[in-house]
Image (cartoon, rainbow, N blue to C red; front, side, top):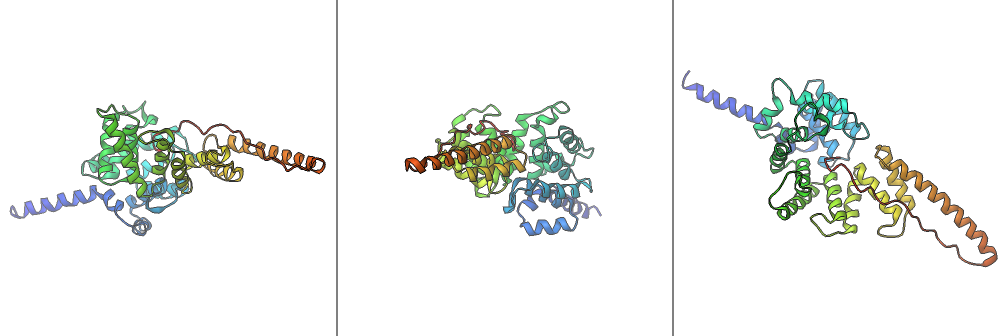
Length: 330
């Protein structure tokens, strides 16, 4: 029996590591495998599928409603990742912000008596590390839990190094916006841009969004509005609300070409459907501008009967794009 004890201990340890690395397993799995496991009742797979819909992983378009469905299935089995997903969904439109729900779900994860998320992060689970980083840096639980941005940054880095693209985006933002004091700012700007580009290669919508912001602001790269628009549109077409509003503003103002009010309206409506702040105001301004344009054109057409002049197209003067968004995974 004593001879066999080390063997059984090694098997147990390997089993624990496999459990702890469930995040790595699903991270490297095909979407159909995740779906199949979720349908068969695997609580981790259900929650991971929810995160895929939240972040637009595995080629999925962002859908908070689909994400909520799978997260709720996971929480029926009291899984910590399901609770995290519901808390995350409650932070942002269209299902949030709902501070009470964010606190409730995040604290259930962090204060789990068995400490499952902490144990799994310690065993190298990149998704667990990402979850801890999100909770430790969350403004919504500050009054109940002391935030630790330095530790959060370390967990983001750990998850990013393991290949989890949403963590790479967050760690890039830590570097690009000097969230935690850094020694070599220029080096970190370069690293942040590289991380965003790698996440873009994974076709992550929010990576496109924040790389677009970098091109718009000249943060780590030269200002290039054309490149900014390319990335914003890539994110917008995959369901990323803040990018949809920015694309609407690009079209409305004619930032790169003549104003296109039809496209501006289309993207503004998409952002409005997701309850993005500022979208309804832009739609109202577009409605007024379109009505004014029609009135002006009709007046010019009437004048052309007597003056024989071609109508002169009107210019649209709309507010600039919003100059700030939540640089934490909004």
